[in-house]
Length: 507
Image (cartoon, rainbow, N blue to C red; front, side, top):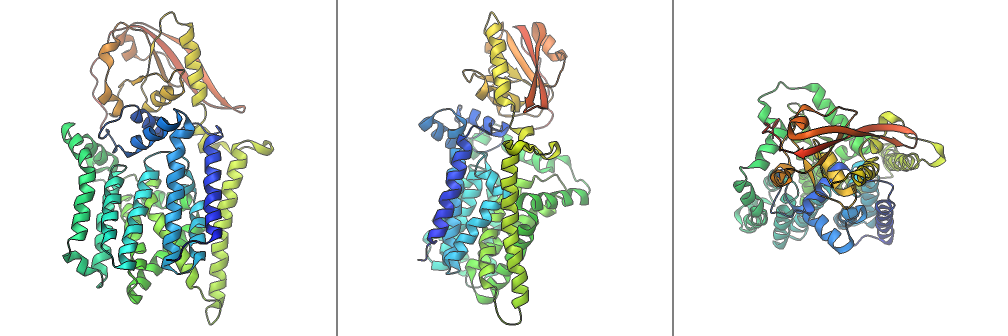
């Protein structure tokens, strides 16, 4: 078995240590989704309103080992990202019988902004993409070794991936395309191993099915709303499709995106022509995903990260395609252009990521333009808000409970407010979320509460109805290195009576 070379191992180690330093530096607070999944980890269950339980289990295990800090919340993302790159390097090195393919695979993954973010932020995507890559690794062993055991590994990866994100179901049509498209693989359709692997995957996933059956199939209804199915049959939108395509080009980087597409076409064509099922697998695990979401974007809003799992097989395919370029013969000029393009596609994103880091930490006195500063918009200011809420609480004669009309604020207050208290999410016309399943409002009657929300606002009418007396105590302006980001209002309610029933604005 060919293994990655020393250079590949050093690159993996370097990226892993860099990511560990970044999550331990304290420079980047938790995102709202990370804080929300951390809230899940404090309330472990068989499943949750919008997603499966894997992200909560991973965070719970990590924080149990090290404590309730941002570093330990994010540590699983770093470990999963590093392990995924390592698996991809092994697969590339052996598939193409060249250690350089493994090195190039890791280098490509390391400079993709989408992969870089997924190796730092602990959301549902790191475990999901890892499980997709692990399933591909096991199927590759089926193709390369013709051994049935790989099916069971793929089945386990399929089931565990479903515990993270229901998009893992896409593996089924992708594998079916792979089997049907190759005459050498079709006999597997008559053998028991693929079906036993499928049953194993659904057995692992079964607690989520039971949980949903007991809760009115909330997750299924939520997914349908997110996918736009519940909105009826909208007209195709070319603008939406172009927006999704643009998001993929931006999240992967332009040159790499088009090189990867070309590599997938090469892998599919050569895999079928040469009878190399491991190449055909790379195309089947990527192209159907990209084509499906591109088609779906004509009918509904598709988030850019939804297709993240397509890019690990794409990186492997690109590394293999590059090994096939000839430095001699009639195509030497084309090869030269391709190599220059590949070098630029790695160097330029790496330079952009480095420049982003330098600007984001404020080195050299430079700043990211406000329009492009997504980190400040999404991550910064939450510790300051928690501190401000804590200072207000200390001035009150009775300890209040905390609440917000946004799950993002509620989750961040739960993490950053002193003592990491329980926080409630009131429904003032929003969509349903996990907080509504936890409830707990009845036990709060008679207590005082602090309501925190975005902007400089007066107490909303629903708050006046729910308390004997309400008063806006403070507006908290969030300023990051001299630049105003956002304001928060802190409103005190005395004598909680309970909120009147309010319909949700969708699921």
